[in-house]
Length: 175
Image (cartoon, rainbow, N blue to C red; front, top):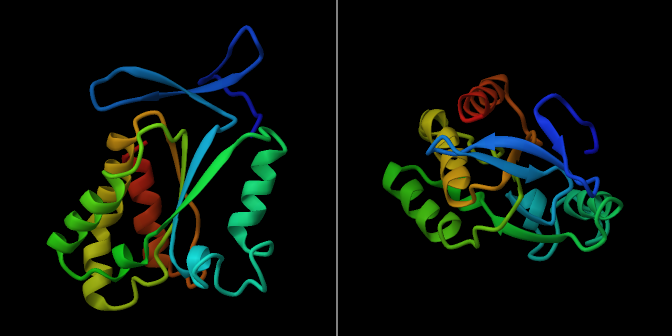
């Protein structure tokens, strides 16, 4: 988290910022150490209602470990969860559009890090075909609604080379 590159700036108080550009061409300084994080995920995030599937309890899922790691840099970091499995399981463009309006556009705009962990439930031809464009659409929606957020898409549990390529391409095309 603390690596500084040529695209990053250091404030007089020592805080580090990454530069991002919004849809209007304005530069935005986004903190390297996040203050507010949104996790968007499937059953690995909320499979047992309050904690991730395949974890023995709430202190053994990936959300907990990432949150605790972030706390080593900022003990006041605020982390929230959003179930994205319905996004993965939607098989129509109108369903995806509705999910974004109902779930992304209703979030507060002050997140400075969004971690997306989706793709596992994109598991049939209809979903795979839709994912080719919906992946990029989701990132664009997040970046538009939360313009000061860095967006990171983490890998899937049940990965495929095809989905990984779609995710990588979408991330590349949306900065």
